[in-house]
Amino acid sequence: MFTYLNPAVRARLIADGKLIRINGQGATISAEQPPPEGELAINVLGPIPLPLELDGVHIMAQWYATVRSTELAKVEDLARDLHQQGGQHLFAMLASSMAVNSVLRIGPVGPLHNPLVRVHSSCLTGDVFGSQRCECGPQFVSALQRINEDPAGGLLIYMSGHEGRGIGLWAKAATYLLQDAGEDTYQANRTLGLPDDSRDFTDAAALLHHFVGGAPFRLLTNNPKKIRDLNDFGLRDITPVGHITGVSQWNRRYLAAKRDWGHALSDLDALAPDQ
Image (tube, rainbow, N blue to C red; front, side):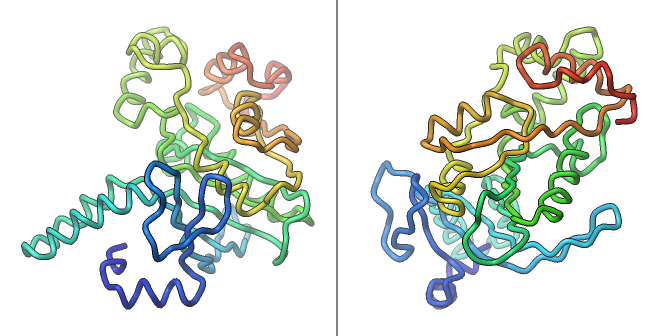
């Protein structure tokens, strides 16, 4: 991460086309000059070949790491001060406070034609621990496999700042305790004085504009609000594709609450507990 502090490394990455900067509309802007003040600018580092193995399925992805210029600049300034003061051992703490989103591109090279896309919110308990209290882990794995099998290929955009629908891991842990006491996932948020869903899809929209442009794409989601949010950023030609997986006895009540909130989960009651 902090190789950016070396101007020669940064210049080499830019010259090789491995480091670019895009604006909120996905257009490439100068990575060498400071972005216009107050305007969204996202640094995109990649592609980086990333061979994956999920449930015995091998997938070759191209990984792009992305971060807002404002966040990166703050962390780089702090890192520069630490470097001068001999505090390099604190770099890891700085890096952990920066939201780095990811794009995994899978499938044919060249322009994308109606690709299959998943905008996936980070979920440590589901994606990493394998928790069955939600369906996030199975959705993540299934999305990669479905994109890999699709002739058009596509993208998985992994949003690192979306834990617990945007409330963060600590608050999410508190909502779990409230759910164990009888509240559903949305009631628990409200008890803590938090919104039902505070996720921001600004960066995801900019990345979709960059990688897909104005072309149509298919979005793996059961959440109509996600479609509406992306529509608000000018992404109009979106076809929703149902993405129900990972239903179990542990998350059926949670999924029922999502259905009641508006998710397209009308077939939930007909599914077996292990579907």
